[in-house]
Amino acid sequence: MNVSRAFVRAANTSATRVTIARRAAAQPAIRSYATPASSADTKPPVALYGLDGTYASALYTAAVKSQSLDTVAKALSALQEVYVKDPKLSSIMQAPTLTSEDKSAIIAELQKHTGGQDKADTVKNFLNTLAENNRLALLEGVCTKFGELMGAARGEIELTVTSATPLDNKTLTRLESAVAKSQYVGQGKKLKVTNKVNSDILGGLVVEIGDRTIDLSVSSRISKMNKLLTDTL
Image 1: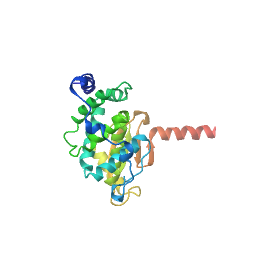
Image 2: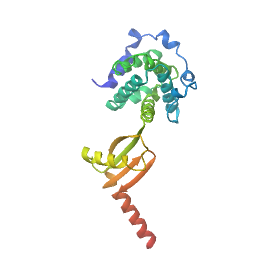
Image 3: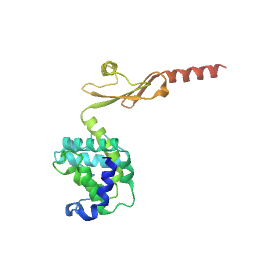
Image 4: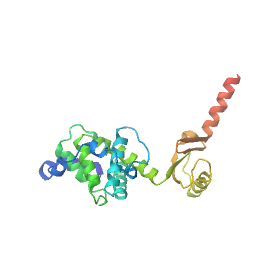
């Protein structure tokens, strides 16, 4: 069954089978999640920007304090997969007409997809906080930003290789090995490799390592050649 239909059905029937939990009503506002940590160990490994970044950072701190970081990471990864499987979910979460009962039903439906990972109820409490602040629409961005925090905490560096056609595993492994030995990767760091396909580059590769970009694409070479010819003429 389509995931978004399950969310719609849950929201439509929530008035008869779901009430707002008292614990949810007592949940603190986002400032309780964003309270500066007293220990350096609970501080997010990198600074994030935007409202979704603020919420992700607050959730990271809350997860560390409750010793549930790994389970929270798995739960959010599962939720992110729900968005991938059903793009309509974003529209549902952004609906301005959601009632309190709708939000409670949506949270209950979301919890079905976390695979029982949220043992300490950290994600559940966080979802309630988002709902109370009318910020459920931020959840997709929070999942993405939380993934960035976990990558940084694990010492991972994003290696994105864009090609005109999909690369095979052997080629990706060779690229990973070459980049790992380069000056762009610090000692003890791990590479997280992603292959993106963009036919517009025509051929060659565009390699992004962290915040650095190495453009080896055919389209880039053609552009440079055209500029050279134009300047010469």
